[in-house]
Length: 216
Image (tube, rainbow, N blue to C red; front, side, top):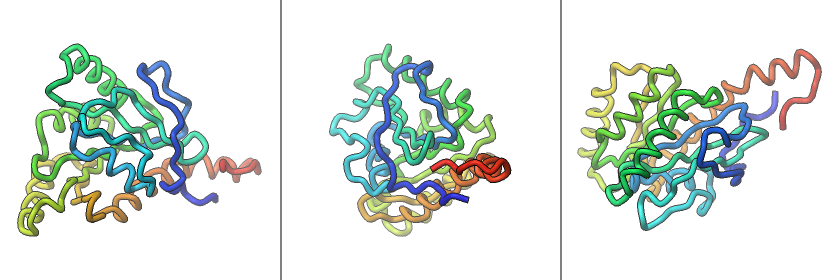
């Protein structure tokens, strides 16, 4: 069996604005989050590439679905940030349509990493993302970002509250995370790689059974 994909292989592959332009994919992990929640910084930290995902001082600027290839036809997917007040209503509506259909219909999507600002978790738009995606039965891992801005007691209380509020959703896990202090980075990376390895296992078993080379 080939080694599971490693995040530090990530490199930009393509950007798309319409679902019809999505690339062929064996497996992919989507990163989603409210604008200014720290999504791009989280991707950059987890892939160990400082400028892989675009970080902007103007939240909501990224309006495309960005694919970063980890291995052959295996991707991290950076979804458009959502909820920024200065984005025109028509653009918001377009984003919502794009995000909802992608999350509900994309067969290659293995799981979603949802980034929430630990100081303001579970906004109505965060809950909307969960409502779109959790019916698929695929896992969600929540990164409570910017945890370095909380005291230790606040971290404990916030984590406990979010876990309790989402306890009924069995496919959702939660952790504290900070791109600045690197808190939780190793745990998050290990979980993502495990998701991908499990998703690709049937492909590798088939390759071994027929005696053809495994995907590189």
